[in-house]
Length: 178
Image (cartoon, rainbow, N blue to C red):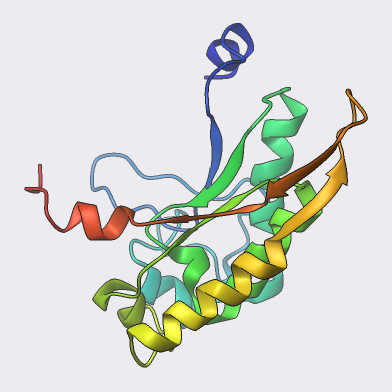
């Protein structure tokens, strides 16, 4: 991936943050630690399989160190990533969501968030009571993440929305599972 990214700077490549490893035949674990006390790993030394399992063992500080390590690894390898997103919605957990959004500020990179509330986000405990509450939340995020700044190369003043809001889950629900 690193070589491919270097050879194709035109691609839209993101850092896909993960704290979960759900597959039976292919499991993975954290970059930052192998300490069971971190709350990041199960009895096999891999990430927990599902977000609720991760949430039940969550050590927020250890999770943030791990998520930051994943971003920093991509920077270390010179990947010019265009956004940050997440695996299985894990950064949408209430304990991590604000930090996930702040990664966008810290790395001056858009973070991907679902535009419409649905059962998936409610199951993760996002706390959206209804579609109107979530829509208001999204409007507030859009207002916060749209700003004007001086482009580092051209020097021109540009507006850059640092948070992309997707309707991916609405689309995904219409597709047949593979």
